[in-house]
Image 1 (cartoon, helix red, strand yellow):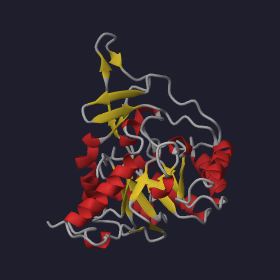
Image 2 (cartoon, one colour):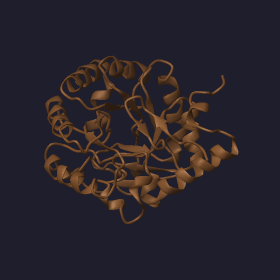
Image 3 (tube, rainbow, N blue to C red):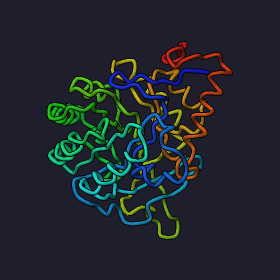
Length: 303
C-alpha cells in the first residue's frame, strides 16, 4: 500500500486528485457515476452573485487532443449554489472548494464573503483568469498590480484558505504568481485555458461569438507543466497543476515538477468517472516505481 496523502499546507487531502471548476458542474451531476468520497477535493463550477446565461452557442469545438470552449461562465447564482452545497454535503465528505467569479472587484468580494460564511465550504478559489468572458480574453490575472490589489482585498475579508487561479496568457506568469503570493494567496491553481481560435471556412468567421476561446485537454499539458515548473522556482506556496491530466502518470508528472496536487478537467466530459481510474492508476504507478508517498517524488525533477 502507498500513501496518497497530499499536503497543501492549509489542508491534507486523502489524495492529490481534485476535479476542476467548469468541468464537474456543481458536483451533484456526477453522483450517479461514482462515490465522490474517493476524490481528494472537488472544485465547483464558477459562481457569480446572480444567475448568468453565459455566451451564446456554439460554445464548444473539439480539436486534436483538446477542447476549445467559450462557455462564458453561466451559473445558478450564489443563493442557489448554497442550497446545492448543503445537499451535496449530505452525500459526500470530500472537501468542497467554491470557484469565485465577478464582473468587477466588488462582486468578487461579495461572492467570497457569501461562501466564506459556509461551514460546508473548505476553501475558495479566486477565478481571475477565465479567458472567454471579457472581450479578447482579458482578465484581472493579466496584470500583476490588479492581481495583487484584488487578492489582498479578498484575503483581508475572509478566513478560509484562498487559492488563486491564474492564466497562462501572459508574458511573465511568475511575476503574476509572486503578486498573488505577496497579497496573501494560500495556493495557486495553474493554469487556466490557453487562448485559441477556431474558424469556419464557409462563413469566414470565428466559430465562436466571443471570437477567441479557451483551449484545454492533453494538448496543453507540456505547456502547463513548464509553467508550473517556472512558477515554483519563484513562489513558496503550494501549486495545484492543471492541464491535460488524463492518467495516473500525468499526476506524477506534475508532482515531479513540484505541484502539490492536480485538477482534472476536460477528461470528465468524455469519461465521467475518470477520477476513479486516475486515482487507481496513480497508486499502481507509485507501486511500480517503488514510491511510498508523494513527498518522495514531489519536486524531485533532475536538471
